[in-house]
Length: 172
Image (cartoon, rainbow, N blue to C red; front, side):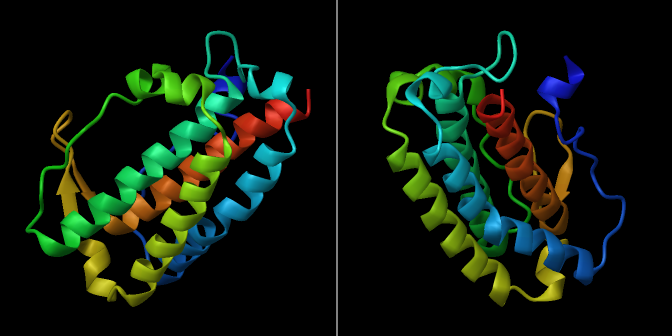
């Protein structure tokens, strides 16, 4: 079950980082939509309704989740760059995935949104100064600080994590 839940492995928060690593994570963020959209659009209707693991989300829910989640991430970057170490707004991603638009909605809309978010996000990431990546937000649930460099790694991982979920379904 662990391999189905975390096909790319669990996320590990970096204890340290350098700008070469950050640039690699930024590149993963930039390129995710191309591969994600390609896999998602190649899926049949039956595959879109298939969960990637028992009691897991369907491919359709994963597709909607990724755009919802990455929209949150982009906004969090904007908050951190315009406010002093803000506490972010958490959201119940599991509840969002159960809403009708995520369970039955057209996948083209979140795929277009994902591409647009990543284009804007990449544009922002490219103009950030190295010191900006040390700025952080605080998560309200665990009260931990998340520097933007680590958040880049988190969302580079997150994209690959859910891409692997779609690939599990499309390869089965």
